[in-house]
Length: 235
Image: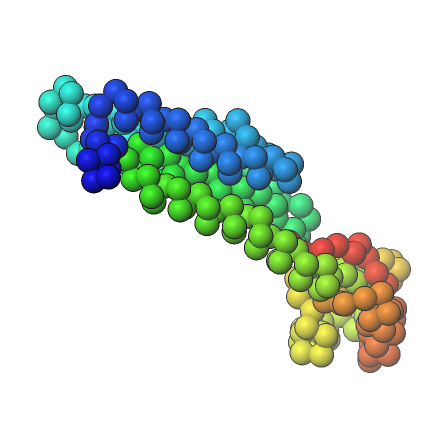
């Protein structure tokens, strides 16, 4: 058994093929999960990222062991980590003031690159276990997190008040009593020059609570009216 382990950890033509195939398989596993949720980077992208990262590790070892050039065997793979950061940026999108998507996919691409590097160096256990943990984080934990978000929704509300000088104090009330956030002071929708508008995100659990928040806001001093602006979920 030990002889097999020693052989797999050595650098030769057979282990090069094994490591590349392993990188393609592990990258494909993560890519399939991303493909399932229709993310920007899917099956093929993750395979290529993992393969490319693995190849940089193999090239570094080839230079040292076969060509005999004395160099840092980790120099080339180290550049991959930086380069993947730029690749991941392309998957991040900002939708509105409070909704950013693609961060998990970007982080997954970065993690896939490190898995490929590990596979290329023959760190089979580390590469395999990291893949399993990534899949748990992106699928199992995603379902748990998404379930919580379904129960805790957010609604964007527009509030018009008649005294522009009371904006700061009014925002503090909204923070303290309603747990509101993401405030934006805007021009009044009524067109009255003395009025001022405030848009904010309010957490709610159901439609009844949504109506209750609007009623409570309408009862506050200086509030002319409060309406739901554009409901959305944060993720």
